[in-house]
Image 1 (tube, helix red, strand yellow):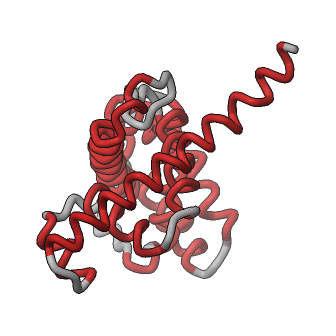
Image 2: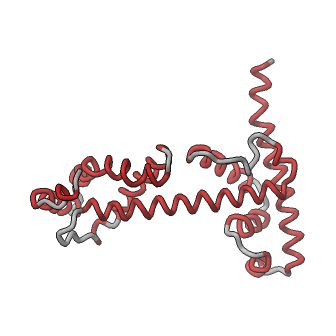
Image 3: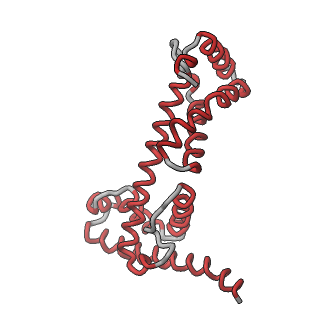
Amino acid sequence: MRSDDLQSRERLRWEDECLARAKRGERAAFGELYREYAPAIFARVLLPKLGNRPAAEDALAETFRVALERLHQYESRGVSFYFWLVRIAANKATDMHRVKQRTGRALSSLESLLGPLADAPDGPGKQLEDATELAQMRQRVATCLDALNPRYRQAIELRFFDERERQDCADLLEVKLGTFDVLILRALRAFRKEWERGTERTSQPMLENES
């Protein structure tokens, strides 16, 4: 797909017709736009930026979801719809990088404080190579957090996932700094217990199969 093809009168006319129908609620018209531009968005924008197919596929779905939600805001002004999709896709890729980096930092911080978990092959701070692995680790962390006292969960989320300073956390929880330090220590101990329970549940079926 060359840039001159994108800007041809025939293509722009076809786009305008599809967009007008899509704005009237015709999903089939938006589907035509998806089939026309999704392969290029995936191959030229998302896969190079994100580096792996699962992440790029997730970002592609998000790109077109956002485009559909904001379709009423779009005006072509003689420029191909493709370039609007490129901007949305690039923003989605950037957002995914930020989430991955923030989550990785949070998990590494938890690992450094939880001590022995650092030696576990599936510890929370292990290298996260792809989107699927990251999603699985985040789900396991979320399961552990859900099992905690709400106060403990909030303390961990503020300190490690929102990356707030200790004093900010204390202010938000309406406690003194010293009280927050005790609270976060207890929260981490509780989290560690839940993590170890999860590890035991995961390894138990393997032991049963071996026997």
